[in-house]
Image (cartoon, rainbow, N blue to C red; front, side, top):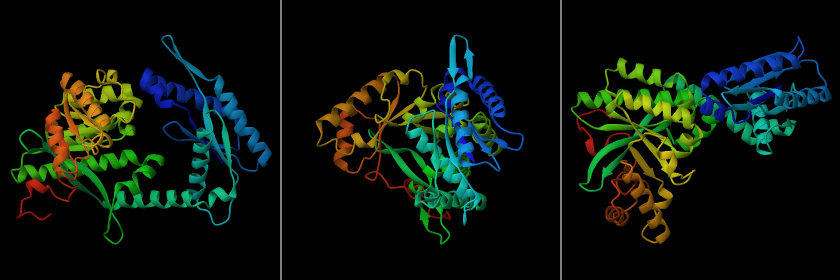
Length: 394
């Protein structure tokens, strides 16, 4: 089994658009056909990922084949106006059968081998050995993938809500929706346990849509209870690049009879800049129907103010790593003040994360930051802490 993807494919989509990206994938598929035998099975696994299943082949012949694919793909290119995109691929090679291994084990192992090849330098491949198959990281990845799929199927996800406070008048502006999984024993599983696996296994878009629908359902409940408050929803980079994402969100808004202005969508700075063209198009579409966007974790990624001019967001969230020590670190004070000044100067509202106590809250007030979020304001709760209806069944 050969598992490979196109290196930096998102850059092609973002710089030249999805139509050019699709044309490039067609060329990759055509080239792949020229390398393989009639008895081989070739498939597009998802996005820019491809799989080759070559039966009755020696390890040496398999290694020759994967090297031929990696080398041969470099001749594939596509031109958009004056910009030429050339292809390189990274691949994982797995010889099987292996005893006591499921199809998921084999796929996960080949996938991890591919990522290890990518880490070693794009355009190459790595052979997965029998030890790799039984590594704990493979088993963990497979187990969590199955848990996520089961939880999606059984609707075993729920939202917790963390308040964002307006610093000047100490009123709650909106709540951020934070995803939790419900375990087999009804335990609450935090996102740090499963989000990375969802990203690696192509399930993150489904999780995003799950969060969107749960937030829409909650907003309907709040409106029925006479509670007027906005909800903020986190989206992944995969959703920014998904051509169906906006239409799905717009359709859900219509089906629940909701206005987009009831929601703020969040994406991290790194995800937005990595998917710059897609992010710009997606944010504009959300803005055009009345929704808003927040750029999350600002300061730990590219941190270039020039990107802000290309991303029509309404809120700029200052990463908490610069906020939590603001009273003891002059550097952090200067950094927060700089982000806040530029953000507000561009007409953006600023939100400081990791506000853990009154002292931080007061310091942010003196700096003129607009909003605060953190345990000092309120922890994530299964209900809207400051808008709780005691008669409601939470």
